Amino acid sequence: MAAQRLALNFIVAAGAAVVLQASTQAPQTALTAFARFTLIDGSAAAPVPDAVLVVRGQRIAAAGPASRTPVPDDAQRIDLSGRTVMPGLVNAHGHAGSTVGLESRPELYTEENLRRQLALYARYGVTTVVSLGDDREAGFRLRVENDSADLRRSRLYVAGPVIVGSTPEEARAAVDAAAAFKPDWIKIRVDDNLGTTAKMPPEIYTAVIERAHQRGLRVAAHMFYLADAKGLLRAGVDFLAHSVRDADVDRELIDLMKARDVCLSPTLMREVSTFVYKTRPAFFDDPFFRSGAEPKVLAALEEPSRQAAVGKDRAAQHYKRALDVARRNARALHAAGVRLAFGTDTGPPGRFQGYFEHLELEEMVKAGLTPSQAIIAATSEAARCMGLADRVGTLQPDRYADFIVLAKNPLEDIRQTRTIDSVRIAGNSVR
Ligand SMILES: [Zn+2]
Image 1 (cartoon, rainbow, N blue to C red):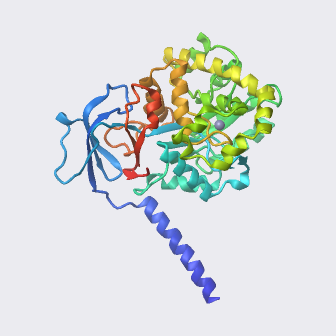
Image 2: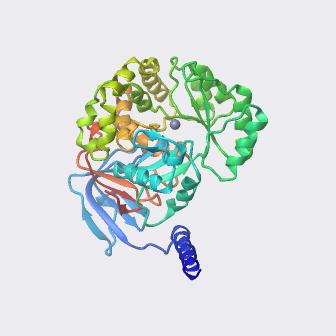
């Protein structure tokens, strides 16, 4: 009995300590000045050679050219000669928590698994992840720690359960239930999975969007078809979580998106993941990939029977063609001034968290963006589209000190985002 009470007291005390750490931080005064590097600040500004970045506690105090950015006398100085510094990547469409190896099940969603995955994203320089759906209680719990001064993993924002309902009343009730947890987004799926499943009809998604807006929540939609994207936009959707993949975008879609400044996440790697394991992908030999991948997962993906099944899969062939459409549409939307929010749909089996974000940047450049435009989409634009621009996405004063130190400049070759020397989150080293 006494032992039992002691154990209970311990749990209560441990819980109180966590809350204290997360919500009442002591003022942070530790000052660090990074110097002599090239700064890419995430905005549309030109890169700054010979830059200085001053970090006070978990936030940026100053960033700019050495000639105009004073270094406080009491700052610890770190020389980053020859390096390039850019903001941590902001993934506007990821998933975390439900996958272990090549298995994905609700029971796998645990705090431990979430922490492991958020640490993995962080080591690859993905410092913020908006998990768009299938988020459970532990995800909401971890979100509270985002503002902790000793954060050492990717910041997590969550959408909660994907909203479903067979009547508008059911759908509204599902929004109400999700809203009780204060999600960052409401997520819906409007897709028939290449004609194999029932698609959420307009009367249901309209009810979801209206009820979410009444509750002050924004709605992100998974969709595939151009006609559905337009229907969702007319119904007031706030974010298109994938590319339009059945047809080229047209003026009507562009006008609908621009009228309310709605962003789209191309998630090109989602398409790649459907067909790439037909053979052994070249990236399996990349040491940067191998540093975060489990050998037994790679072995499973290399099994001849699995490769043959991918090769014969009709959906995989369809999505491979859809990738070409998605690339064309990413370029067309960007050229028309629609905001692209970098996103990957990583997290499900075979979509490698952390590494795939670097492949997505390369895909965006293949689609026709410049390296600079791809980096802006992956930092300031993703943050702005997600409503996080006051916290992350740029290396400007008062934002969190979430950044990547690179050995080589990615503006010269986007694949050089993979030359990571170190990663900081809230000023703390995570790699
Ligand atoms: Zn998704």
